[in-house]
Length: 440
Image (cartoon, rainbow, N blue to C red; front, side, top):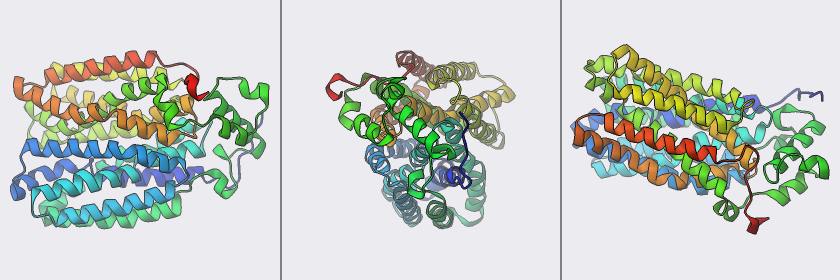
């Protein structure tokens, strides 16, 4: 069937805006938090343990906020949620610059910045991509999620320079101003909730093609392939009949398998990002040489979504996840054996590629299993399920190092968690998620 692209399709412009908003959301929070550790320790007496607790609290609050945010996104409030997130993030960064006590930093970063990042960051832009793309959803998710790892490549070194020249407080104020100056205009001028809001259709397809594609996606995510063709349902009727409720998700075995399996990916990403430089230092690298590990790790995280996001349009995302787990486990085991400096950089680049690809492949898998109507809700409830893993992983990893004086035990624990995730992914269906009988 010939597809006629809409001459003024806005989807790719929205995808570009999502790259910038993710760069802001992650670059000014988790992507650059490490450069503030030393000045906070000097001025406010923050210990390494307190610093890592702050990162864990940030992850905890962010994940706890996601179910509520996801419901708002599914109600067509993407633009409003992202605008509010940018304002909250900017205000929290500005308030943190004025903190005089360590607990004040913790509240501003661990609560305000965490919620603001969750509202402005990957979940919101990924939901927008799910709304605007169907056939090309994996590619769009891959491009949009380049922004998260791309931001720190620029922002972290700039922050380190600014802290050295002007101090950490003016640097945080500059972060706040940049969030307002970049984030808010990107959202207000670049983000639209759904194609139907401006008379367009997913992928820029012609109306007839888009209607068939939408019906097929909605029905196949609810009752299996072939149903739409046999029953000739209209998109509106399909949406009313097969939307996933929170209760249905809570009783869906496949949702629990997906959420539990995805949790170790987020945990590994946080742990490896926070410990990459200390690991290289343990290998004997100088502080300058150790800090360089951020570059290959971030470059990998930028290129990974492009490659695996596009592959998710051709290969079932469940299979891609299993393959990514295998590659990531191999890289972690390689780090156990204390490789040379050059090989360690390569292994961290692989870690970055796999970690950066997670959101694009995860989003594509949610679309396959549950459709677009509950996209934000599935992602938000999944984040809630993953809270214990994401919160505990940095603490367990740090405790393992304190007990043994080596990163080997912590890396083996991460590898074991990923192996369990791979097993759970094999239990997911190749088609649509199985709806619980009570919600049929």
